Length: 99
Image 1 (cartoon, helix red, strand yellow):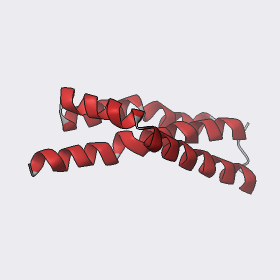
Image 2 (image 1 turned 60 degrees about the vertical axis):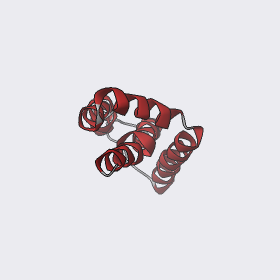
Image 3 (image 1 turned 180 degrees about the vertical axis):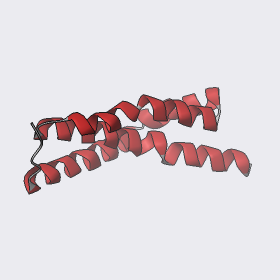
Image 4 (image 1 turned 45 degrees about the horizontal axis):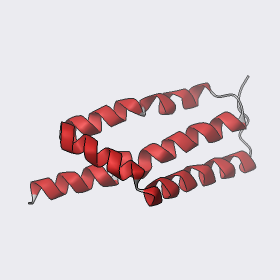
């Protein structure tokens, strides 16, 4: 069984990822969680821990067979990218290096 990705499924998955990233960023909960992790574990270890936490959704994208699964995986990837990987860790790192 394989996923035949139509234009509609691809569009919905992209919208899902963007909406999850925007809502996660606006909620601020993700930034507070990541800030606490970075304060506790320091930037390198904190970022590595979060990358290992969100690696399974990236791996599981190769095993999906329908459009709903593809959208769900894109949702988790969007959440992980919105505040966990990029912005908060880089901002913390730069702030601690040049402070």
